[in-house]
Amino acid sequence: MNVRLKSVEKYYGKFRALGAINLEINDPGIITILGPNGAGKTTMLKVMTGLSKPKKGIVEIDGNNIFEDRKKVLMKMGTLVEQPEFYTYIKGREILSFSASLKGISGEEMKAEIERVVAATGSNDFLDKKVGKYSRGMKQRLGIATALIGDPEILILDEPTFGIDPMGSLEIRELIKNLNSRKEKIIIFTTHVIEEAIKLSDRIIILNNGLIEYDASNGGEYTLLKISGEIGDIPPGYKYTRISENEYIFEVREEEIPEFNRKITKAGNIKYIEKSSMVEETIRKISVKNLKNS
Amino acid sequence: MSSNFFKVYFHYLKNYYRSRSFYIILIITILASIIISYLTFRYSGKINNLIPSKLSSLSKVSDESLILYLWAYIMSSLPVFSSVFFSSPAISSEMENRTAFYIFTQPVDRTVLILGKYFAAVTATIISILVYIIAELISIETVYGFIEVNPFILSLLMLVLFIFAISALSFLFSSLFDKNMYAYISTFVTYFIIFYSANIALYLLYSYNAFFLLNNASTIIERVYININPTLFVSNFSLNPAGIHDVILSGTVFIFYTIVSLLLTFLIVEKKEVK
Image (cartoon, rainbow over all chains, first blue to last red; front, side, top):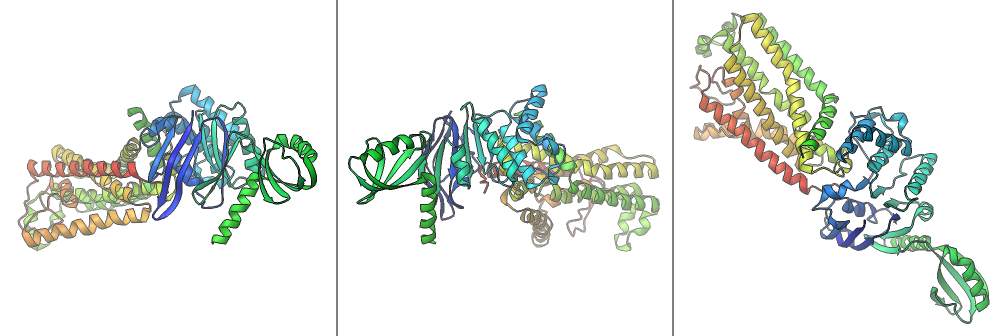
């Protein structure tokens, strides 16, 4: 199970929405795509799901080209792209039955599967009403439920908590976390909320102007430690940037911070240590850069 | 493929028959049925008195043929309105209402999706016109005591083929746009302005009967009773029913429109971007 984007470029007229993007997702887990509005997050998901064809490049899911084996690929995939809309005269339960039947699920198995996704998304209360009467949050829950049908190996969720109240958002986050508990799926989701990304993700990708600006691969979130002071021997094994004579920025994994602090205090006369998230720092830099360019 | 086709077909059919559009077209059909039924009952045996003296030759035609011609004349317009309601927004609405994000990410070929939706739209159109056909049968049976089966069946067969053709053409227009309004307008303008003006111009300028135009071909639905083409200023019409040659020609035109329009729709939708 893997997702590969090779030199993918996508244009809307003359506007470059993506590219050239190279991305490989080989390990199961939660992969979050962060970025400001217009960064290309949704375009990337549209390309991955075959909704939008790139001008250049290849999109492969499990070795299959999405545009050549669309049906085969979508069989293994659950998707929620943009804010979901459904046919207004159809009931939520009928939508789920339809999605289940297209994934080859029928009879008692279908009933059980629908019950499973309904329970997971808390959509039982409104499922027998026609979709035309749904609120944005209800449609969002139904959208997530349809994505979960058939327990797909790859889940693609575009801002799954959009339009859902704070309690509901918390439930959806818990749901995503639970789906990842056995680390059997690739769950790709986009969000604007940095804390949400940091709490949930195994890997964070930050997009800006259609390009990957940051990719914390191999799991885990790095923390940036800005250190001021006279350091004799820099402890080995840490990536750092010297920003002035007595100022350094180290990239350290969250769980390694106590050990790093011990080593760096021994190494010199440290005046202060300022801690910030690498993701937050990248987003801040992007915001400043975009503001300057606007 | 066939099992997915039926799943898609029933899913869309459900959405069609529960929709407001379906009930609007049903009401239009019922109103038309009431008006023509009233005419049938009120003027039975006296229908020739309503014919202007300039068209006195029509008085040689039997009362029943004239009435059936009138019923069929209205009947041939109904699919055009139904297809505007059901078929014109078929694909554009997926884009405008953003349901494409859901449906195009389901594991089913886009061709099967379109085909299933197309047959659902055709079925919804036929169901909505069924009321009119039943009213026609009851009125004619009550007033005249019998109905000539052969032309009646032939007229219905042509009607069904016409429904397939006009729905396919509407699907094609729908596939070209992302806004329902453009699809509605294109279907109406093409059928009622472009086809009619081309038909009349070709006939008046070159005495050429443009049999290949859909509106012209659709007149076969009433011409199986009396061979008068209401889309042309033809003086040398025949009071006899249209011959088998005309029926085959119009039937071929319907099939041609259906196949070509659907194939083009499949090609366009296959490459369609969901923005």
